[in-house]
Amino acid sequence: MDFLRQTLVIARKDLRAELRTKEAINAALAFSIVILVLFSFAFDPGEQETVEMSGGLLWIVFAFAGTLVLNRSFAREVPNDCLDALVAAPISGAALFLGKALANFVLVIAVELVSLPVFGIFYNVHWTGQIWSLLLVLALGTWGLTVIGTIFSALTVNIRLRELMAPLLVYPMLIPALMSAMKLTMDLIAGKPLGGEDEVWLRLLVAFDVIFTALSLVLLETVLVG
Amino acid sequence: MSAVAAEGVWKFYGDYPALRDVILHAEPGACLALIGRNGAGKTTLLRIIGGFSKAGRGQVRIFGNDPRDTETRRRVGWIGHGISVYDELSALENLSLFGRLYNLPDPQKSAMEWLERTGLERVKDGLVREFSRGMRQRLAVARAFLHQPSVLLLDEPFTALDDRAIAVLQRLLREALAEGRTVVMSTHQLREALELATHVALLNRGKIAFHGARTPQMLADPGWVYAHYDEA
Image (tube, rainbow over all chains, first blue to last red; front, side, top):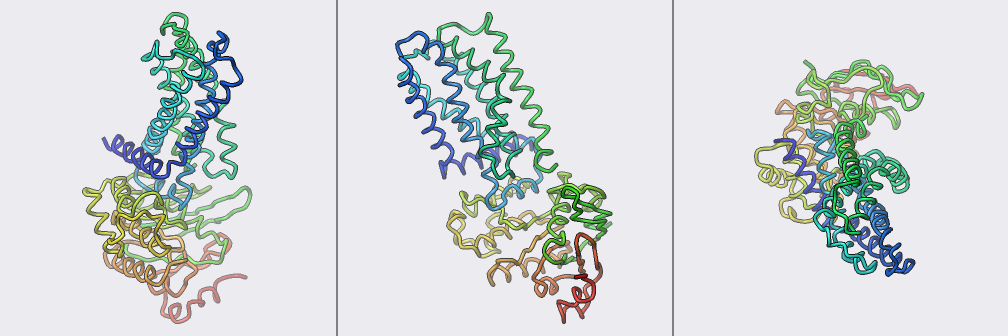
């Protein structure tokens, strides 16, 4: 019970701080929409090829935009040495990680949900056909991105070039999750329901989320204190 | 049982030993002033005692337990170089947040009580980023005392404080000591620290050069310990 309460306290604190400044969410949202619009000029929306690759494009944009939110996760604790106060507090590393990951998830998914209609319009994609399945894939892919981004935000919090280092570490780790999310999204946009040959990708995405969530919950304390 | 005990603590940064076989004890109710020149290892030692980093060799105990134990952390208050409160939150939100993290029965009430004790009740809803430096420091003091810790670890607590904040901190520390709490503070402000201290430890290049009770002689001449025990 304590664990859940502390997790929610951390998540609420991060969301409140972000909603007051809107630093990360504004940057991520602007980046996501601008890149989607710019890429739409490079590809002909009427082409079947564009529709086929749009799922991949969408996840690349989400991954880059998400990093803008995730980089700030532990960097937010650096001014005033707030991280010291959290490390000194009687909360487990797992609760701290999960609280931060939950707040990041909410912020990243909000950016994605606003970007989706823009994507649909500019790429002439009918993304609402399999909406519930698409939302499931979106949630699973975003959780994978959030977990990796949050733990690497903690790992790089005391590094001077953390804005550069975090993405360099995050993207290679994300390859399995991104590949799965891209493949599933492409098929859902093409009108194929989940299941069949896509099931293996869905399983990979779920396994990725479970494994890296468990690892991060266990490792955060070591990452922060040594 | 000592409130704080460091037993043979070494800390290496690469090959450089920042702390060398540090043995230190602070009994319950004692106020230990940790003094030494810049780079002597005061902050490194305090951070190990506070559980922020680990000793390379040796061990630290707080009431016989590991500093990273959850129950131990509940009994420790910390003031470091930063104020450790959030600029984007109000004073009340900051203290309520830490009250919840320390699982206080009524975080809001405790927060209000400490805002009053530090003279910040009138700005309770103001965002910390709008506070003056002195107000921010008083809020940091309130955060450290909020959960009534048995052990207070203070790293240069008087540095950059205005007169009012120094007075508030000294009053709160006197009250804490009278209640039997233990204080370990690193400082360069010898006069303020020695007025409160019951014991003094001098660190020189990572080694304890002196550790003992504070004497009236030290109070009369704050530089006395340096003059007699600090190697150049």
